[in-house]
Amino acid sequence: MNSKKVLVVDDEEFVRQLIQIKLRFCGIETIEAGNGADAVERAISEKPDLILLDVMMPKMNGFEACQRLKSIPETAHIPIVMLTARGDPSAKERGENAGALEYLTKPFSPQKLAERVIEILNHFDTPS
Image (cartoon, rainbow, N blue to C red; front, side, top):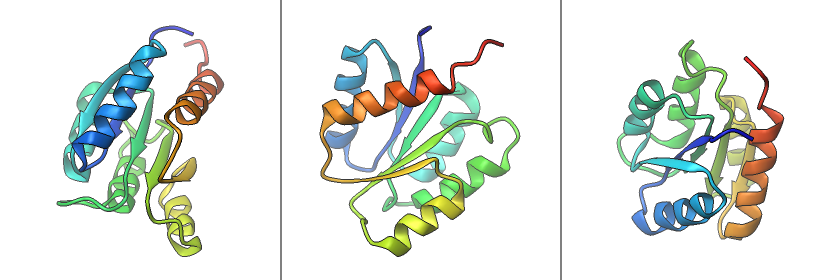
């Protein structure tokens, strides 16, 4: 797998740092955003290979950010994995309807999350 870049979006700095440390240990480059509005801007400018997106954030929540990213031609192809404390079925359905590839709930295992991220990146790693 070539060097891949993941955008980690969460309003809690500790969560962003935890995920970034684990992904970097696995050889994955990371960038971060602390809210949905910044996530959209970073995704457009940085063109990540995958986005890990929290739901409950200031400025623009994860559902809105996901819908926005899927509506922009430059970012529509990027797989989005929602990672949130909201585990209720209606929230999961809303995430899928917004265009998320997967909906994972907190608390999570950093190791299992990293393994899943690598699986997704490998799946979407198509030669250009």
